[in-house]
Image (cartoon, rainbow, N blue to C red; front, side, top):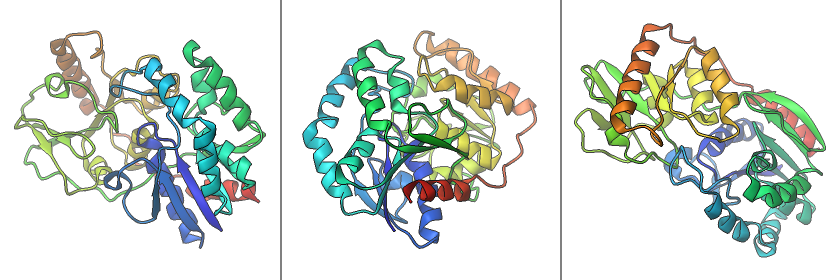
Length: 338
């Protein structure tokens, strides 16, 4: 079958796990096109790419904050009849659509008469219901989701309002570990996805024997102990790191779970998915940083990161997980597509 895998444009976690799914489906002989706004430096070039921002998610000035007013403005364009109809004409060229987990893609596939299935560890109608300014879009997205089946990724809240839901489990890429080319004995990979983190350089403590590793899409800093590694894939650096400093996001958690890499994380505010991912992180023995860059001064954040890092390095490293459930997830998706 010729299949479109459509990644939500909110961050990069949707796109990276979709690459793992694309690998599995392509190995079975299916022709895959990834619809994504993520750059090739994040998702690679193993599959055909259709560069397209198919939805909004939430507009964020950085990884820890949301801008609901800007989100509403962006939704007016992304969810317009013209945008949905244009997407529908494109999807008419495919035998099936897998939406992770953009409601716009589900509605466009319905209009094109092409079978579609949702896949995700949350759904956007559920997310939007937590924000009063987005309630009207939550209702519209629920209508767009309702006719379609879905495959539930974990960890995350239960998918809601689909025609039927099948459990899928964990989905993530796995890379062979590579160390950054810095002589420090301890490498901390800093990863805040497509949104980055404001004033990052002022938040990282200077610690003997520790290098903070950054790689695209993160930006360079001017500090000697902040090493920018442009030539090694981010996921390979993650697998080779001693610890990852991040926010609670599915992509980072899932890849760290496969690699057996400890995690430190900063609070993500009121993003509704976060408590479910934090529960999974706590269960691994990972450490939440006891300070918030949005409300605490940089000095307090630096101290809290140092304390969390010391506690995590002193604890047991989580064992790597041998595999995700991409084969079972692919089976479930293909059944849904008929």
